[in-house]
Image (cartoon, rainbow, N blue to C red; front, side):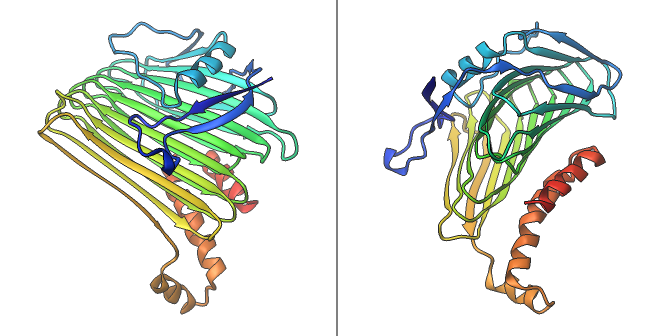
Length: 351
């Protein structure tokens, strides 16, 4: 039985006629748990079942909204905890197959002073058969720890996905997120990073291609609580054909986060008059001694760029394809595993 819920709510409402305050979806939330498969486990990572950990950090919040979180969390009855107790240069690689309606709940707990790299790859599904996947990932970065988490979505056309990442950072903790969105039909993806500790930081690099009849809805939130915290959010992609893309990006400077810095930039290459592109970059200031910038641009391929390409024997379609792919490969270059980069390139070849 289908249930209709609002998802990816903007933290502070804007005019309703803009139709950007949230996404509304109707799905059959009869989900079975899918814990994924670890195809590479570095030394020093302990894996247990569960959905809670003991930590001094306050609980981070998800960006997709309480209704969606409850539905996914209730379906993922056991959950999985990855405790990183030792630094490693090799990434933990988790593959989640989207062949059936499923729910995943992961906790990544990085202990004090440890450095880690986690890659979650979404794959599979069917072009003809519809399926729904809900994924909740919660990250706790203890004092002085470093984590790079990559989420790569390479699903078939029949997949609908809800994906959220909640992050909490202690003193001097650094978390970076690389997110690649290429496949599926309807995607609601977001993150909510809580910079609780002194000099903690969060960096994100999101790249996407939204084409055919795809619907991509993004809700990205960073909350500055500690002093001298830093965030840098980058989102770049292409919208074409009859696709729809919505971006919400919020930097929330709370009282007490003095000397903090925030930056967000979102750019969309628009390649079709039928594509719908909406963006709401937001900065909220509850503290005076801060520095924050934001911006969003939507544009076609410039005449200057076309002239440059044409002068080198490259026609307009080829030029558009090159620039579209460049946005993806630039973000994918930060994923520290060559085999995953090759899978992304192979998927791009078949788009």
